Length: 220
Length: 299
View (cartoon, rainbow over the protein chains, first blue to last red):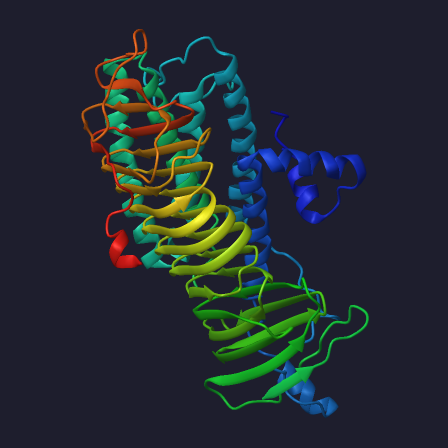
């Protein structure tokens, strides 16, 4: 498979790619579910940013202005031809998007490593909180990424819809239990391909849930 | 308010201005004539979204909204609608008609999404609402973070997922990727060449034909995995579990040298041309004859 789109993702979503660059990106997207997912995520972030409250000033100034100029109050439906909303992402959302992209890059490298490696290395042996020395240490990559996303989610917890957060956290507890069981199984049988693959896929699921949760918009 | 805007020869941004309304719930009812192949996008915050297909070449948007304003940007080739909450508290109930075949994108934060009869490409996502799609074609993606997802009658390629909700996929002729963290995955009467379903604590159930040369992957951590091949089965089947079991209606004959471990093995049924992988860390894996349960009742 070709290299993942990486930094070209943003240009693709923005419509800035042309010619061969665009054709290459589209060809890659046709065969790469991970990049298609990243494109969808970025588009959702853009779309939801448009839908978010645009943080009006503390006092609505329009009625006074309208009275002075003899215009009607703010219309309920506003033409957008002359009023394009700018995108204003929160720091956590940008961080989540950035982390998602970096994970995608790491994931691509990991995939390549898996394809090239003669045998799958057991990942339960890695220390849980180890800082990755390089991308070839998959357990450390997962742990650091998960730790960062958990931090993002924790920091934003108060801003998010409590029901949604509760559902996400319940799912994360389920996944954590599965990860613990899979890690224990791998520790008992480090060379078991199924167990190693299962642990990776469960870690992937947790990353996916955290990534989606970290990109949740503020509660309305 | 009811507004009708004719199709324009060139891309012209539709301009809709509702008169000042008293406080409380308000309504908008507008119809836009569009060209065949027009795209539709909606971004909602809270409330409901109900979309239906129509044979008329027009888009009708009816919305009841409160503490919000509605922004509509339109041209004959694309219409975008947004709910913009006032003071962060708005909600809107949409009832929308789209020409059949319209490609649509719907994003919402906490509203349910129900789309029926549009039958085009679709990308639907709600963070905490339920999402239902009946009829789609081409690339279809239906996602919820904490709500249930139900999809039926799709042709093409389908991704359906929820974090904590269940996912039900029925009567599709498509390659399918379904996933959940803690919900069940039910794939009934699914005809695809590449089908996967993965959940952590939920159960996985699949019924449909296992096509020659197809790839099928079903996985759970603690839930059961139940496969009902419909029709002839010619597959190389891999079974992986840590502490679970396998119950098979098909004979399990292990090929020499392919038996990896007692709980991880591979066997062949028929010509073995398809690849069928079933895995459950601690649940039971069932391989059943006879297609979907309850098939008679559904027909």
